[in-house]
Image (cartoon, rainbow, N blue to C red):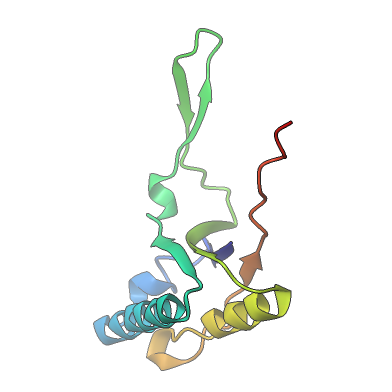
Length: 128
């Protein structure tokens, strides 16, 4: 699983919310083209962009089982902006893909060099 995190500070004052429409379109086009390449290689399982942090909620069950919601969390320094689930041959390949995604174009077309967190999706334990 590749996770794209975005800094919350500046999200609306310096982040994608301030980009020119053509920069946003170029960024989205990069992501869609990249996903097409991953599909063609057979490595793509799923990818999704997520709603902004202003819509995030943390939900816990109360003692009676009903939902208790909290959020959004203004103190968060970053948030999960999107993710990919990929099926690759090993760490070298997933790191190569993460580096390519990190270079997605941002404001003015400049590469973002954004951090991409890589985590292995674990399989279920064997059943006796």
